[in-house]
Length: 165
Image (cartoon, rainbow, N blue to C red):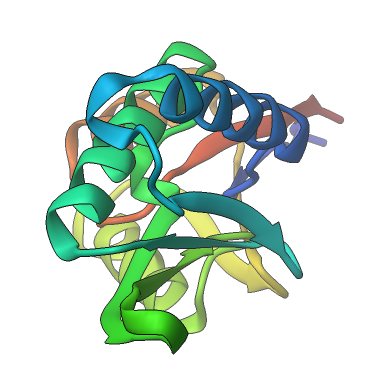
């Protein structure tokens, strides 16, 4: 009987690195001249980020600092889903940033369709918030990974749980 090989396509965010980047951003904002005396804050609330500042310019500048810190720590910016900027109390503005965890259902269907349309001799199935790809040939699975990496689905993807049974 032929061996069955498989791997999982997942989307995970390392919250420890997000927290570290958050602390670094807070420290830099407190030390920068253009933020002196401002009430600019960034905090982690229920696994999502909330940025607040006096105006949209300071919010954008703080966001740039945060993005730089996240990139240095290896957190993909594709994992961030920016919400609309909204007015907050005291004449400030606030923006929620959702952190993606798991592959959304519509993106999972898009990935499975992409694999089927590419005519690889593999099976792709959606299992919760992951996509499992299995096939007999390891080289074909590696070709699938290379093709997926070359295509932008708008989400942060990792490939793990590579198994040979």
